Structures are given as structure tokens and as C-alpha cells.
Length: 479
Image (cartoon, rainbow, N blue to C red; front, side):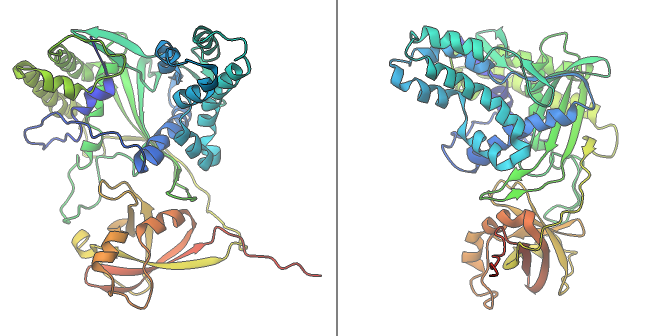
């Protein structure tokens, strides 16, 4: 029996939007061992899910969070088999239970990382306790007993929320399906699951102001960022007593590439779906799982990529029909049930009221120069004027990990140039100043005082950025 996850099944529909022609299941890219994805983006989501639940708590009832150690308890036997000697116990447990990237990221965020640090501390205390008892422990039996005691289901963090939502298991056909919602709650009298996405870039939204070709953007312009997650939610709603879902998208502060802490205006958007809207998708996803039976039965303690199961099927006729039925339900009845107005599908529940940020004068003002490119291709209505003030925001971009977008009066005008683009296209464009690329700008976004247009050539605008230094002005001792 092959073990699969709800998120893995959803991944077969990654990038789906209402206009996708001939949709096909997607093969996952290999998981990187380093880089922005696992060092920043994944930890960002892990840390901010706690903050999202804290904000959401004020709009729902009986809220509970995901038990962060449910998976660890299920894999204790497999982990214990690796414990051959006492010298390696602490390091092995640390690798298994403490995500160092998330730990480092939470520390960078300070107060915003506190809840995540509290959760990680539970595992750290367990490891420390085991470490102090190594002389008396029998491996792996006593390690398992101690872990089950220390990492028991149900713990409360300082936000007052109990984290005890378990992993759910279903045997469907020859598949063993595992899923775990981010939370559970009661909303308007209905028992609902909570699924949270805390994006690195802008909030998921179905509306935007302008496309790169200056054409009006449809109501579903960014839908491919989130539509496929509804498949994951359909699996989380398999139990018949689940009456709906609160699908939440949360924006919180983030740590930039280096030492900067990017201050964002916190916001929470949600889509609330009741079971009657989701039932068609729940049924078609169940049919897909039945059709996705592996060619040969075999046990796997770790989740298998469903695409591998798809590829092993000698006859894909049934599974392709089931796949197309899921797509048709997603893009048809379900999406139609959401699009009841001409405005955004997402409901805005919360936007943080931010006080004006004041930075003390002992941090001196510095400046650097950079360029915004593709301006007139991005926004043909943009009118350059010397001294024009623009805003810079870190935004997700599939092609550039350090993406910074430029705005003028809330209208996007282009992207800050990357190091590669400057090297290839701008070497002699503005010879009087040294150009910094976007990987330098991301680290100072939260310290920018103003960004000013000072020159332009064709579709490229030269800007000067004035920002407060990270280092205080030296004070001379008077004697």
C-alpha cells in the first residue's frame, strides 16, 4: 500500500487556472538542498502560520491549531531503528525534530517569530531531557517512551490556542492517504477545517491593477497561485462531519536575504466554503484516488509522489478521466459558486493599522542608485518626471528570488534590475553612478526613506534610494 499526502495530490494540479488548455498532472521539481525556497520561503510559512491563527482567532470560535509533532510521533519506530549508539542520539533527534532554517528565521523576526520558537522549544526540551538520561536509557525503547511523554498530543502556546489537530489517515483503494489541516474551528455555527497559506510575496488575490502588456486583468488573474489548493482542502474535508473550510491567506513581516527585517502591513484574506459548495470536488477527488492505484502493491513509510504512481499505470484511461473530472469541477461549479460578485473572491478580514515609522537620527542617512527596467512595456501610461517619488516592495517572482517591484501612486511601473540584467544590458547606460541590483535593495526595503527618479533612458529609469543605515552614527567621547 503506497502512502501519499493531501498536498502531494494537490500538486498534480499545480498552476491550474480557468484558461489552462489540456491540463496535465505536474511532476514535482526535486527538492533543493539550499537556497531561497528552504532557507526563507518555507520557514516564512511555518513561522507565520502561528501568527495567522492568532489573527483568525478573533473572527471564529473554538479555534485549534495543528499538532506540530504528530508526524514525529508516527515515525518514532523508524527513527528508533537508527539509534545504534548513545553518542549519536542527540544529533539524530535534533536533525529529525528541529528545523534549523525555521529556528534561524524565527529568531530573525524577533517578536513575530516568538510563537514558532515556543513550539520548537518543546522539541528542544525533549531532546535535552533525553540527553541527560542517556546513561540510563535503553535504546531505542526508552527514547520512544520519553518522546511520547514529552511530545504528547496537545500543547498551548502564549497566544492561548491549543495545538492538537492530528493527522488523519484513510485507506482508499491501494492508497494510504495522510492529511493534516492547519487548524479547526467553528465558524457561523459550522465545524470547519482551516487551511493557511502565508505567502512570501503579495497576498493571493483575484484582482490586480495592470498586466505587463497593459491589458485589463480578469477577475482570475492570480488564481493559478491558489486554485489547486482546493484539492488539498477537499481531502481534508473527507470526514462527513466537516461542514466547511476557512481558506486563509496571511501577510506578515519577513526577513530579507541578509540582516534586514522587512516590515509589512499585516493582512488576512479568507475564502469561506461550505460543504455543499465543496461536495462535488470532494467526490471527484475521491474518484481520482480510487483510479490512482499503483501497478504493484508495495509498502512505503514515506509519502510517494503521486505523479510516480500516475506514471506506473499501464492503462491511464480511467485515471485521466478522473483527473479531468476534478479539473472540470474546480473550474466549473466550484469556481462559479465563488464568483458571485464582480469584486475580489477573497474577503478581507483584517488589515493592520500601522503607526508612522520613525527612525532615530543617530542612524545616518545613506543612499544608493539602482534602475527600474521594462517601465514602458510594463506600464505604457507611465510618465517620467524628474524628482518623481516611487515606492519599492519585495514581491514574489517566479524568475527572480530577489524581486523588488516599483510603484508610482499604487500603479506598478516595473521591476528593479537584477545583477544579471545590469551586467548584460546596463553597463554604460548610467555611467556617472554605480548601479546596485535588486539583491542589494531587498535588504534595505524596510529602511528606505524615499526613492526618487533622477534620470531615464527609454524603458529604464534611474532612481536614487535614501535609507537609514543599519549602523549607528559613531559618538565621540568628550573629555
